[in-house]
Length: 525
Ligand SMILES: *[C@@H]1O[C@H](CO)[C@@H](O)[C@H](O)[C@H]1NC(C)=O
Ligand SMILES: *[C@@H]1O[C@H](CO)[C@@H](O)[C@H](O)[C@H]1NC(C)=O
Ligand SMILES: *[C@@H]1O[C@H](CO)[C@@H](O)[C@H](O)[C@H]1NC(C)=O
Image (cartoon, rainbow, N blue to C red):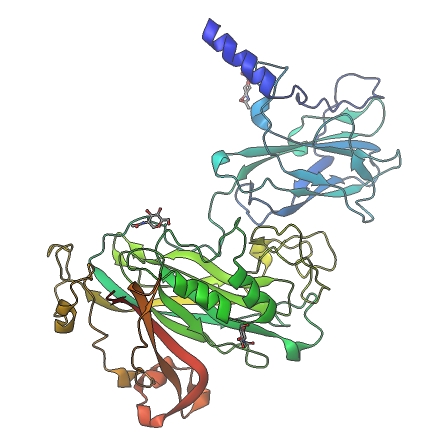
C-alpha cells in the first residue's frame, strides 16, 4: 500500500463505522461447528413477479418464506439476513460501506410471530422460541430508489437448525440473490427528458384523463359513500424543463394543496399563469373537466401547445375522498430525436402530496407537520387500513389511464430556425406578427384545421394583456372556447370518429369545459 492509499484507507476507516462484518449465522448453541448438507429439505423462497430471474423493484414489499419440506423434519432455530454480497471479499474487515439492503420486517401473523429482530447481526431476524416450526413468513422491504446503485444486488441468506448438531447454512436453497430491476416504474412517461429541444416547429396536443378508480377494480377500503367520490379538475401546463408543477421528492405548492384540499382550481391556475414566459416557465394552461360519481369514467380532456422552449407537460387530478392523494404525470417529455412525440397511454397510480396525514381514502386527516415531500402513496403498506395493504405496484390496477396525442405540427420559419429543419408543408408566417418587433420568437398562426371537424365553439376574443411583472413588459393573455357535446351523448366516447364528424349544428354546450389557450403579449411602457 503506498502512502496516499494508506491515507485514504485511514480516512475511510474514520468515515464508516466498523460495525458490519458478514453476519455469522452459526447458532450459538451449536455443538457441531460445521453446517450439515441440506439436500433440499429446507428452502427459502421470495414472492416476486419476475419468473425468469430474481430481481426487485425499489421500495416494495416482498414476502420471504422459510419452509420445511418434510412433515417429520421441523426446525427450531433460524436466522435470515439481508446483506450486500460485495462485502464478502472486503479486504478491510474493520470497515464496511453501508449499502442500503432494505429492511426485514417481522409479521404479526401465525407464521410471522415466530421471528424477532436479531441482536447478533444487523438486518437480521431470528426465532423467538425453541418450538418446532414448519414455516416462517417475514417481509423484506427493498432498498429505496437510488440512482447511484444501478447494479445493486441484495442477498438474503438463511440459517436453519433442527437441533444443536444438525443445522444448515450457506446452502443454495437457503440463499436468494436479488438484482435491482432498473426498468422505470410502469407509470413513468415513455420518453427521456431533454433540457433543450431543437425542433423547429410548434405542436398542438390533446391530453385525456380516463378515470379508472372504482369499487370493482379497487375494492379494498373503497369509500363507503360512493356518491361523494370524484376527481378534481385536471390542471396542468405545458412548460419548459425548468418548470415544476409537482415532482416526487419536492414539496407540494400552495396551489396544489388548495386543489387537493378544497378542489379549488383558482390558486394553482394562478401559479401556472404567473409562470407564463416566452422562453421558460409555462405556456398553455391545461384544464379539463371535473368528473364526479356516477360519471367518473367519463374522460376529461384538454388541448395544449408546445414549442421548443416549452416541450414538456405536467398534470394533476385530485382524488376525493382522500387525505391528499392525486393522480398525474410530471415533466412528460414531448420533444424527441424523431420529432414531436406522437402518442401514448400511461397508467396512473396515486401520489401523496405530503401535507395531510391519513392512510385510507376516508381517514380522519390532520395536517402533517412538518410537511413531507410528494411521494408515492405507500403501496405495500403494512397498515391494514390502507387500500394498498401488502400490495405491489405491479399488482395494483391503474387508477387512471392518461392518453396524450399529437394533433398538429406548425413549422416555424424564422431566423433561429434554419430551413434544413423546417418541415416541407410549412405554414406561411402570419403577417400580423411582423408588426410586433418586440417578439423574438416567431408566433405561429392559429390552427389551420377546420374547426367544424370537432365539436367546438368559436374562440372568445383574447383577453387584455396582463403583464407578468409591474404594469408593462411581457405578459400573457388568454382566450377560451367551449367543447360541445354532440347530440348523441351515448356515442360520444365510444366512437371518437362520430364526435369528429358531427358538425356544430349537432352540438350542445357541455358545462364547464372551457379550453384555455394562452399567448404572450407585450404592453408598451
Ligand atoms: C469472493 O472471492 C471468491 C474467491 O476469490 C470468489 O469466488 C467470489 O466470487 C468472490 N465474491 C464476490 C462477491 O466477489
Ligand atoms: C376558490 O377560491 C377562490 C379564492 O378564495 C374563491 O374566490 C372561489 O370562489 C373558490 N372557488 C370555488 C369553486 O370554491
Ligand atoms: C429558465 O429558468 C431557470 C430557473 O429559473 C434558469 O436556470 C434557466 O437558465 C432559464 N432558462 C432559460 C432558457 O432562460
